[in-house]
Image (cartoon, rainbow, N blue to C red; front, top):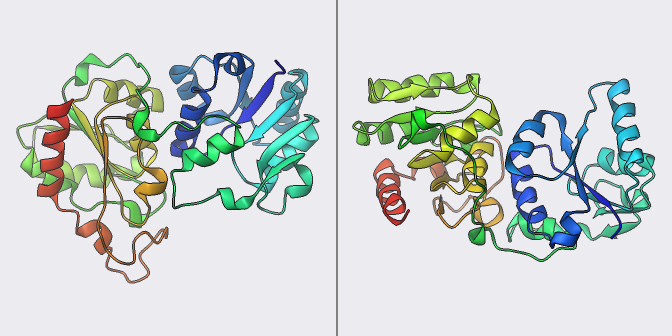
Length: 315
């Protein structure tokens, strides 16, 4: 079979959802597939799968040339572009791969030899359907995902992991993590996220003193995966960490405000997406145009606690 290269998305969540489709490819195809991975995601992808990868380095001209040379040296027949950016199609064309397959968006149709209609980007169905279409692969529902084995960090075994951040913006940040911590004051809690989530972690810690370990800004993605792997469950905003928990098969509750669980619910048989019925949701905005963020405020901490208890019982 002719070798192919797959360009993975830049965002952590999108990358993991796309990777779940790649890993379901028939073995003959999978064994002839190389991943083109955003440089900062290389370690995480190596932890989660065994496919060969090329680092997609673009910080400067020297890195771009080096990445182009690596792709050209691969002798690939087909280039699957999961991102829909103009720059990704331009790169594929410069790499000289004969077949270039992706969505006809961002005025890039002329650079694709196998263009797919832009209407495949449809937020009324899960995004993994889009990735399956681009990869010309069978679709497997996100609920059917079994999870990827990651060696757990025993130091955090049995903890509940909170992920209160979301780089996208405040319209994805659930405000009731401190109240949930108060309800779980007898449970060991670990807070993961970037350094920017430190204030959220401190608010959570004040509600359950002595029971919260604040690891915001202190872990790599691979370290976060190991902590989650040994956790009793994860509670997270719709974020990359939510999708990481789903990918490794941990019980996870994903909290949705401005975004849609229909489009990006977490993977896994032990995942649950929670949102409100606010009529303006999902709006897919970074901030609330009305300023009230009711789509998030109306998801109560007691409701999340109840669902979390049920989820961990089933697990």
